[in-house]
Image (cartoon, rainbow, N blue to C red; front, side):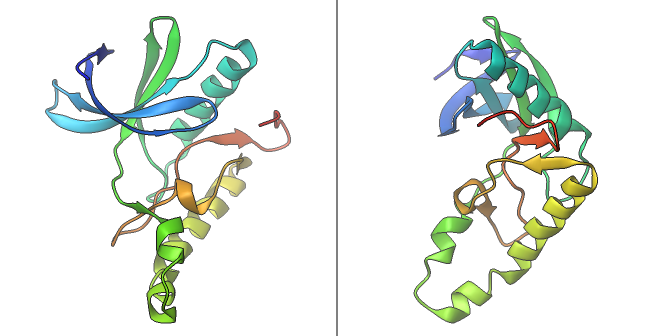
Length: 156
């Protein structure tokens, strides 16, 4: 695409959800590839949720939770920059026709459960945790960040 967001050069769209769009981008300062989540619409209650999402995710430090590198505003819309995690979704792997392939997913599923338990211990509930939001790799999985604080939930 070539547009620049906070100094990062957008390369290709990699996903979209209810609140935002995720782009693969290049960080020219550190010569690395990152992911940028841009808020989709300027709806005030969504802006509040987006701001909560980035702050909560940034404070969670766990090997299976994506790290936030930076947050900012671009064209009056918030964004945040995080590690780009590549891989097929867990959903695609769960549809494997043979039991052995599905059983091979247990270490990855255990990593997700561990991350969710960690987040719950910090009073954070991930409101959109589903197999299609979890990239599957040979290394531990990282859920797509979109947690909300427990007991302070807002509607999806």
